[in-house]
Length: 160
Ligand code: FES
Image (spheres, rainbow, N blue to C red):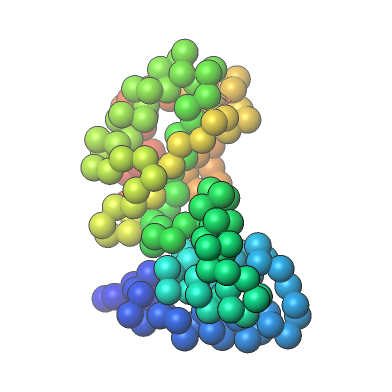
């Protein structure tokens, strides 16, 4: 079955136009509008940049600039599970790089990428704010700390 949320052919610009119409009435700013599109569709389709810019009387390059600046926004479909591996100093000195490698090998993708089945997106972050648990990663909203490679594999399996 096709994943409608992440299928550009089914969501296309139609859903974006609907969101723009709703938000146009409220005169909301660019960031809330982008957040709404991403929430609804799972990412911000490239074809959505122009209609969004038009609706807010901005240049498409301005919209694109904001999307690129904020890491919360993505123009690529994202996985149903977001894995964030910490690359901060506390995690680094406790084997964070190895943890990242194990995650990459398990998923078969590099950081910033999404698996083809749209099950996982892998990101790295500067610090997850739980340095006492180093090395740490997050899957969606759950923290996993004091990681060692075998633990990483079993955590990923939980989200299959
Ligand atoms: S450095 Fe990894 S959680 Fe802070």
